[in-house]
Length: 433
Ligand code: SF4
Image (cartoon, rainbow, N blue to C red; front, side):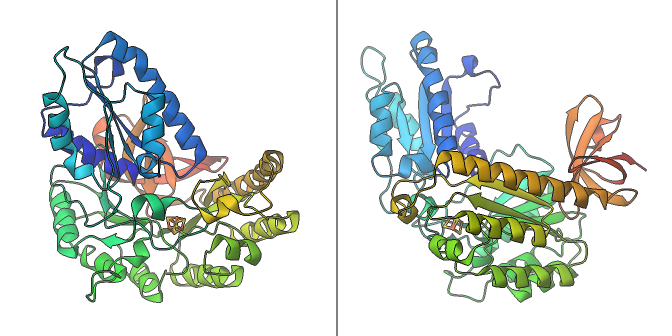
């Protein structure tokens, strides 16, 4: 979502005749788009903001702007502006469409000594009144295009800051999505990734018969060669209709990212995830039975408050049974303002580290075993990047990353057949045939 937001921001800035530079020392404006989902992301961005102090000392005209979720936490913008008074502008998650006006205003208001005044903070308290449309998105991920379809979240998982900083769910108008997808396909994009904190809730707020399944079906029948991907799905909302739509539609990637978060029902209840281990596993079985070749990936968290060793072992057990192709594994990160932050029995860092390393070891061995099943088989791969020299990579229909050698950089954006010859751990290597 933040990559997509950043492309939207870059689009707004491009209309002001600003262009990207790869060297921060050349920049006239440095724009940080922040994330506050985990503590590590916040710490990293604070470090990067600190690095701009000396840049601004050398270049008084440099404009430093911070936007994104971090700014939307109560008191965070004020605290950050005290720590870093060289920041010129802070923008909340619902104020992005005002970027051009705010920057112009900032430049107009420079004081007589040609200096910027104190940090200006623009964060709406009322989040998400509407979906910001922008026709000038400056994309940087061809042949893939990120297309947001819903923003915000109504689920209030007890550990998660997103509903507080992104606001309630707002679905984008279907016609705008369909027009954008069609436009992208006409302009040679080969992969459309629909984005939302919970794509399965798409349409719930539209007072119409639009659902995520209907949306997927509406954008998967154009006469081009392309793939439709999506993320992220909440297990409680992934419908039978959607499973059938994925199974029967060749354009829809056979990959589902389905965060499980924990294996213990007690922990799932404390997390307010609204499903049990049994319900999740039944859904998984349904998906696997109905979508041949599907790959399922997940998010798992360890060290949630109150998670005992037995709870953790239930997570290990379910990871073993589920056989996910891959998993994003995290230690619980206390987010101020969420219910979990004030729950008793917070887990020590040492215990969290011990559990995450056991979990990573298990999942890595599962991913490695699954990768072996791909050997000596040929898959159609959409080439999306050059890694280095003559090494390229791309994804199979079910989202598996494959690396291979090629000589011609024009290959990026095309579909090629790759025979998988070997695996290095979970990563797949092959040759074009
Ligand atoms: S579904 Fe839960 S974890 Fe995902 S964004 Fe919403 S509140 Fe956060």
